[in-house]
Length: 269
Ligand SMILES: C[S@@+](CC[C@H](N)C(=O)[O-])C[C@H]1O[C@@H](n2cnc3c(N)ncnc32)[C@H](O)[C@@H]1O
Figure 1: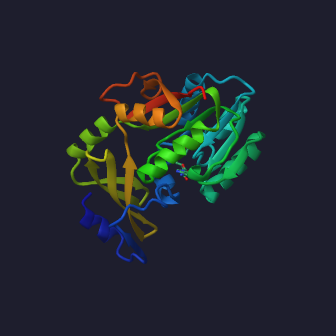
Figure 2: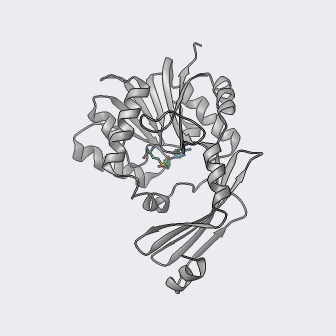
């Protein structure tokens, strides 16, 4: 559906937050983004993600795990149900509220911490950490690196970190093949992305318009998608050692895979 038709569908837009010139580093995964992802975030998907996380992090019951950018706790609660000692961090109070509710109904304990990952000061007490479902890369390069450093220093020696991000090669190809508006519908609400891939900075940018209950919001999102070589350098700079790379589930990583799942280990200090 063309943009003009969307405008006809939503003739009485009441608010327009227009911040399209600068990336909005504070508002990259809002309630609205969550809303337009609900089709993907099924229980079956969460179970598949859990299996891969348990496998890649080599977790065993009783291990201490840090779910960094935990969102509504779909993985944190499942990790706790699997017998792990889970600390879940997010800067979004609404998401953490959902997590707490989910933990109560599931009768498990999860330590929920409301904090920006860039400000996290945790002891080196974790056997493993996860940054799952494209949670890394939405901030400026220096702050992104700071987040990895903080996570690295929360890991015990040889503790593992798994990062689920997007494959810049596949993403750049997708963007080139979809030069116009890309629409995601939820009932009569719509999210419209106009993508651009900045090859020099390895950043996916999106001018994102959402129309929910006829209220329009515009943001410019900018997601850093390092190449494999850049990830390796980043790990070295942040006290980590590259361990392996995968696709989602049991898929091997290659240039075609949409996701890129990296595993690193805390280096000896
Ligand atoms: C795409 S969601 C993924 C949530 C969860 N990991 C999952 O698999 O469902 C990204 C989450 O990370 C959180 N997040 C991203 N960057 C963060 C930061 N710098 N500090 C704290 N939370 C962050 C967002 O608030 C959001 O809840």
